[in-house]
Image 1 (cartoon, rainbow, N blue to C red):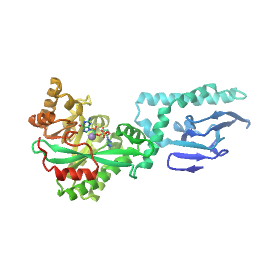
Image 2 (tube, helix red, strand yellow; image 1 turned 180 degrees about the vertical axis):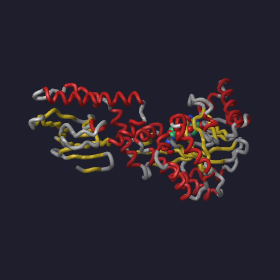
Image 3 (cartoon, rainbow, N blue to C red; image 1 turned 120 degrees about the vertical axis):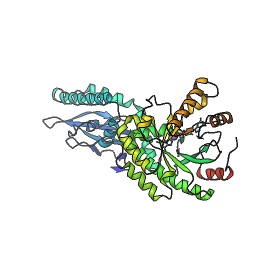
Image 4 (cartoon, rainbow, N blue to C red; image 1 turned 90 degrees about the vertical axis):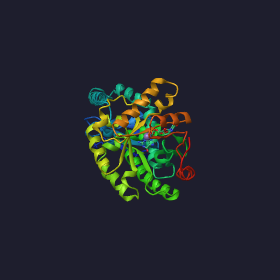
Length: 406
Ligand code: G
Ligand code: G
Ligand code: MN
């Protein structure tokens, strides 16, 4: 067996992948190749139960219990497998709707029971039901794609394939650049540009996001330092970094953020944590504690996509929040739809009353920019001012645009 990285395992034809009676710690998805499944009954007689090929799963029982392997699996061709460890699976399961969680366990447990019974009754054993279940796995190509993508992302993180772009945020009253949002970009060797809207949910599911966010924070703070140095600023600009619920749930999140800030040459006041309402609703107590510590240290706390979360407004004073980012969908419609304009006005008013700063997202033209300034919105971000840009372009941009007239 050889392992290219954490998930990918290769076996030569003839090698045993899973041995009956051994403890099971992980399941595998067959990416390439074919395996045979062999079992011994209580009298020690061996039967071949069948073979499985690409796109199917083997050893899945290990994901639900600690029972020994019920069969031996051997490669009949050279095989490439993707491993799903019990830890990885539990982490995914803990994020899943509780009813799905329960259904998953019921189905897998009944499947095990059926396998047990068929072994005793049949001679040779009959496991038609089990084969049928395997087929439904084989059809789930989405899951295979997602694991491959997570796998590719893990190899890409730390190489030049994954980098940050920065989008400026402009103070509307003065036209000055005040800070940036760091946005992760992935250009894959084979597939080219992969949108964060595609890969972020996948790495959130399997937990890689924690590593990615921690990389992004460190990189963004070093980036901010270089941008300020080269454009002639001294601890005046902020950097807003996106975090997801998995980051907040991870052990040592606050310590890790502190450490990264203290290693960097930027002040905590220059760092904004950008999170969504959904994150707050999902883990209110944990988030409150985490955010309070970050806020005490001087960081800004920014609510992304504000207005889209369908949550009660009472959370705004429960959590220590300094900034509301009005979602792009409202800004987009505010010049043509009265109700959107009213909503934007209300959000600005609400933010002011609660002593928060307001940033409008997705400002694409001068009319929107002028209107938002007139309404007292503090800052704006959007294609009208600047798209997300590479570090060097950001430096050139702010050198040339000390003040943007509009
Ligand atoms: O840059 P773009 O609009 O394509 O980003 C799409 C989504 O991906 C946005 O909602 C954005 O918040 C999210 N995103 C981009 N970079 C990061 C990141 O570093 N961490 C997290 N958690 N989300 C990000
Ligand atoms: O969800 P979040 O706010 O983090 O998403 C930010 C994303 O919105 C960025 O990835 C960026 O590419 C995109 N974006 C920024 N400004 C504009 C804009 O003016 N118009 C559109 N359509 N998208 C924008
Ligand atoms: Mn954001």
